[in-house]
Image (cartoon, rainbow, N blue to C red; front, side, top):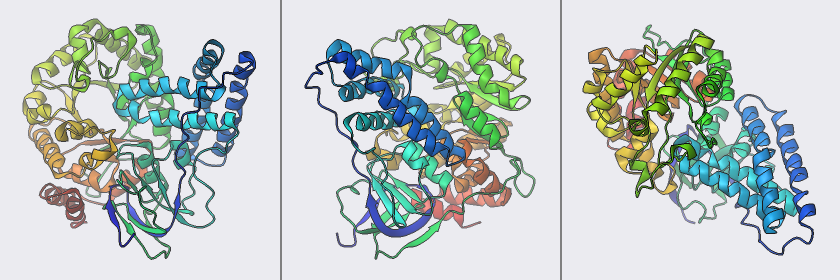
Length: 543
């Protein structure tokens, strides 16, 4: 390779260079033959193997803190999941599969379900793949997959990294990360930021190269061959933040958490979130064969709301449909489900489902004392927004808004603002629909870069409507987790930023160090840029 230079998507800031260590490719599918001579004995091997894997992950979790600890504990729990293990055992006893193949096949069903769910849930399919590969390796007597022990500081190159692998990385040994796959909203990206490790994802062609050393720029996404000298200029690590989203000139911007489970809520509260800007309710429905009752939903939501008594929580109603199939919804097959009956559109045909969910949310709010608002996903028009707000009011919820994640909604933001109490920009899906680029597909990940000027201009349009009409405008995509981009969004008129709990302190501290006029200058520079790299440069100039 002579002076090879590749570009990916920079997801964690900083620059570093050094020798390359390549992570081995994931295990392939184990053979389905020969059939075990004793199916019962073969099935009995599965749970002890799962226990070993779970114990190893739990032991690793005991050595770390924060988000890394939570990820490792979650992965350990998944390794011991009774439904996964029972399904694998059944494949051995009923179909005569070897234990390793049975585990691989059983996990495949869970992976497909998550991938079909799309969005945030699809990104969690990587967690199940990791558990599957660890269980298969244990059953086959192979070394556990993952990052090898590093003797000296190195640049890691991989197809992708499992969350448990990323969580266990030692920032003193890992100079930078480069992956062929993944995207700006992947768990690898989120964890790399929390660890302060420069990272580039969706770097197409990196696996075809055989470099001895690389230089990685996590800001621009550029990866090139280096001279092998170890250099590191990563981000500065932990930030000091007092837990109040406020600029140095006194301008307020709420810094909120994104949550989708009780564990997420506890982590966000512990990290100092001022509230929740996006509470994903799909966890209550994902594995349900029948619609959960109002009482079941009430208890599930209350467990998430409890840490935020007296604080604002924005609950997103069920985001499901033909592209995110749930058995009890019985969706009709669609040729292009991502553009079909999903999100709030499901409720138009089955309004009783959203009515029961709104009732449960209202009850959970009373149970916990959280200051709850609701918002509908996949709203395209002001008429749809008004329909949702009317139903929320009827359920006793005083404050209702909508997600702006369809370009049509952004372009008609003024009309929508007239019928809602607030709007929230879902930048992950907004980018996907704006650029016609699947956010799960590494080949088009660059189009989903939140620094794309076209996306920034659309966000600016909504922000200007918010300022003109006095309508609060939130951002709850991963764009809000980028400290510099958070300043740009603030300069566009955004009034709240919602993100994974690992980014709260960094974003809060960055906001506290700047002023509104600087943010507005940064915003003007970014929207006038011609590509993501120049947008970042323009945004930095006023700081």
